[in-house]
Image (cartoon, rainbow, N blue to C red; front, top):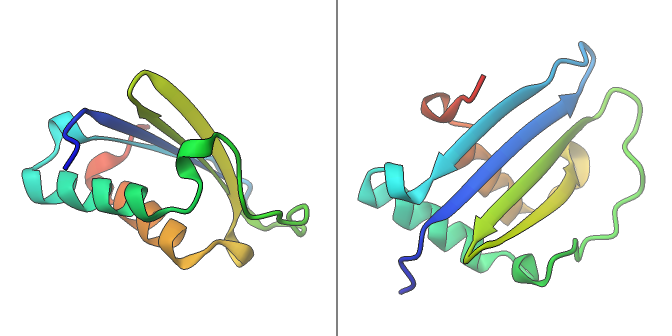
Length: 106
């Protein structure tokens, strides 16, 4: 298994209140079991290493929550945008892990 550090930044925008929230997760600073889970989720995402979304979503509906997910791995940063109502399960699992209270950025 690849053990190079992975950093993930998650920014959530939209919703009724329009509030923005941010989280950061870094495998180099996480307990081993959480780092393993983060790697596993990233590795199972189709096309995550290709640098673009494979899910052609329509624009978000009014007041829909939008997630901006940036994955930094092997010196390459990739940002992906997902809408709450059309997010694939594997992306939702990753969002749930990264957005744990311990990873709150500000």
